[in-house]
Image 1 (tube, rainbow, N blue to C red):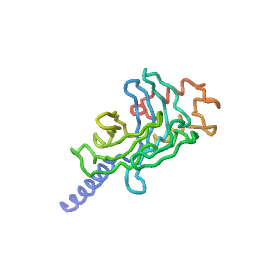
Image 2: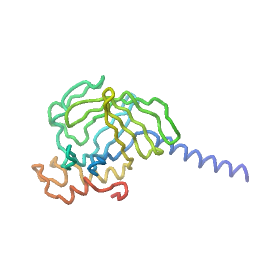
Image 3: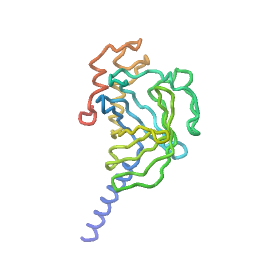
Image 4: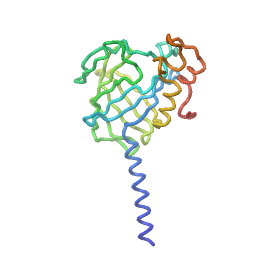
Length: 217
């Protein structure tokens, strides 16, 4: 009886350990928010590239926020992304016809296999990140925190940089958000007309300001 109980405990412990290990990695789907404007910016998909390092794409854009914290519909095409070599990561979005939804903007962040506590995952560093709005690129590092439910991301150049905290969402929720808010077959967002004008303000506000963490779809 004792042996059987031990085997059951060991199996349950192994499942918990696997789940914790999986959640400690930044792979998956993340909700990016602008805290000052209280707006959703995008859902981001992070994944391993062919070298086993971390890349990320804009899974679905949700809003754009200006310096005055005014909220606008996101751009459809990444006209300012340009062409370049971000610390060894070549990219070419110079045609201006690349859609913002689905564009890869983070490259080759490497797992350092070091963490600072049980609630933090390994530090990913030496990556590159492109700002699609102005075409500038920066160094990038990332680390999951709060048992993998958030990820700390820093884009920086020298001592200057910007920190963000993204919140983990499920693939199912990410797909629901993209279906509700993403591009249609006419290459406009679901709240826009064929010319890109916002015609459904209520839906745009739903996409840009709904708290998808507390009120998932």
